[in-house]
Length: 207
Image (cartoon, rainbow, N blue to C red; front, side):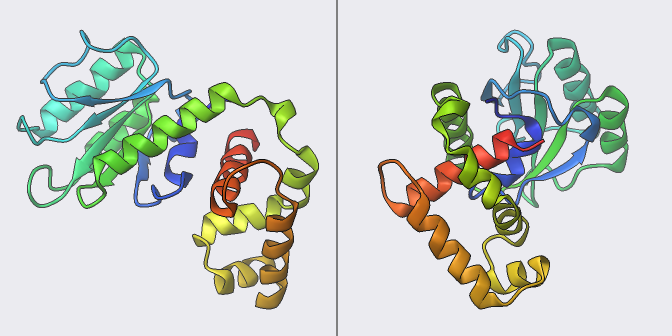
């Protein structure tokens, strides 16, 4: 199993990250997160990194952000994440999103309000987990039986009323299925940790 760019916004706690361009390359594998502090990062990456551009230590003009996309394509990075907010990079220009589409490199937007430590921890945990867990170790029957429920949980961010509406059933049905899922999850750890593991497996294995 491999963490891919399209999985990143669906990781627990990272739903504020949005894919703004380069969707056609959403299957790019993510080898590791890298925070770029210098104007150029090509000397510091090996390929497959998800590069984060903050604008904190260095001003990033629209032209420089475009250069980052070209450089990322040249270095074969997985994708580019630009942090936006009033303090540094205000917003992503539409021209940058179109350039990401043309270059076929995933371009994400992340609000400054989402702490980088939480983002890199979530991505790092997902990468380590995917490298040390084989498909055979997961209960495929559970993943198949609850695929629609897990999809609804991701889409509705765990809101059971919204999940019920999406699934066309009563909220009690969603609650009961969630309880059944909790009871059927194998492995060690707390129920929350087990659910995160199952959710991550679902994200990494779904087409």
